Image (cartoon, rainbow, N blue to C red; front, side):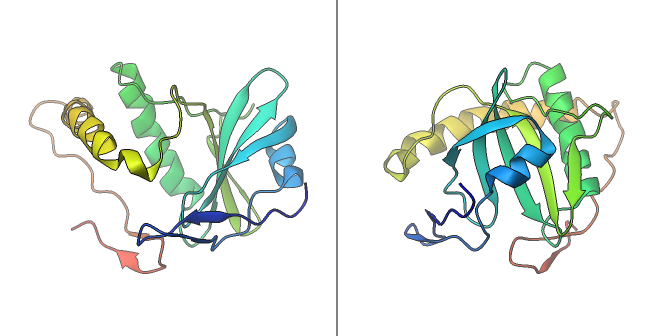
Length: 171
């Protein structure tokens, strides 16, 4: 499996050709001991897949360096680690032997996560997904606040490009 074309969820609720090339076996094998790619994600504006490794199935995401950098992903991964430490149900971020949670290869930046519990839901379940997200949002926000000591102001995230390549200023 060297060249995979697939449709992704369009921003208007339709399916459309992916903007990024699909992950290839050769590249996921370069970042870990892959045996095969089981599934390509229909997420827009990035490439992701489930990869069968020797002892587990992992979720691999690849971003163009104009969308995410190693530094921005590592910041997000530290927050995910915090959420897991306060028992929020989020998949673990996996690290390589050097302790890195993100890796750049050429113009691409990769991250690897443990598989999430549950299964992918279709767009037909959007209402149920929204209700579930609403139930999780408040505890997640509280868990995020618990990362700061009382009265502290969280450090502002670095300015980062959004998926369309425009600069997003969090102010």
